[in-house]
Amino acid sequence: MRPAALFTLATVATLVAFSLAGVAAPPPRARRAPRLPARCSEAALPAAAAGERARSPASVVALRAPGPPAVLVRAGSFTMGSSEVEIAHAVTLCKLEPAGELCVDETEASFANELVPHEVYLSDFWIDRTEVTVASYRRCVSAGVCAEPPYASGGQRFDRPEVPVVLVSWSDAQRYCVWAGGRLPTEAEWERAARGVAGRRYPWGHVYNPFHANHGRLSFDELDDGDGFLELAPVGSLVAGRTPDGIDDLAGNVEEWVADYYHPEYPSGSAKNPRGPDMGEERVLRGGSYILGRPWLRGAARGHDSPTSRRAWRGFRCARDA
Image 1 (cartoon, rainbow, N blue to C red):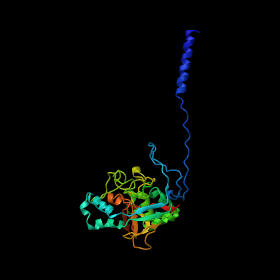
Image 2: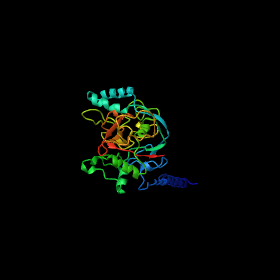
Image 3: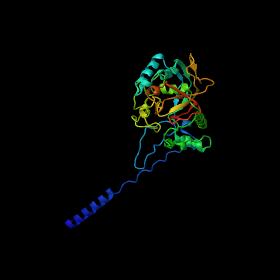
Image 4: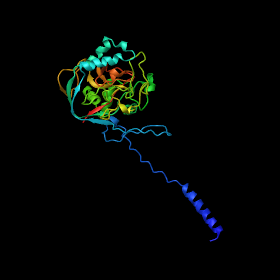
């Protein structure tokens, strides 16, 4: 074959190779994620339901560990409440806060409501993996069941779909949970979820870690952004603070309404599926919040307030019978 012919064939082969190299395979078609029913909240879905989708700008892909909407807590017994030794430890933690000098008799006495430790047996129950978000609560508002939180009266910065709904009363929380197919957790159920059968001091374990919860501090400035969030954090942001069962935000972010009326001391003796006092003037709060320091983030710590009160650091999660 002539050299000119060989040169021509080589040139054609080179052009074809470059042409083929520049042709990319068509991208695979993305599978469409299933849509949740409009009336169905995360709290009411079984643990096998699809995980949530993270929202992010179009130019950023956010990857988060998936988690079920609700977690099944198996039946069993645990010790509810604190011993005098644990209460003394809580007082010590209080005095280590920036304004520890404020831990005078009134503050020290507040930990005494964790007495007396007693054995509690609980049947199987489901509890929400996260606190109820603004987006979830808004579905109840759209259904005409729940009242709109008073964000328009100066709380606009808390009106974000991915953060816990706040400025809700106890009745608001209970109404939402019933609409979602559940109820507020009892105080015993909440403590079992936070402490486990081993009696952890914090949801993640026995040792405090300031990066495991969206917390505050006992100080003249209660806010602390050392955990990455000055006020509310999107639910499930601090994965390291997740319980071994897979439940998020049981310490910090927002304190949570539970079902029980408040009494300053537990009844003595063991109990099965306790529901708290039959009546009272206040309801129990659990979990601490973004304005509270580590003594109040312990799984045994108890708060209380009028059921009609609304706070910018208070929300809730739901539970239901298994």
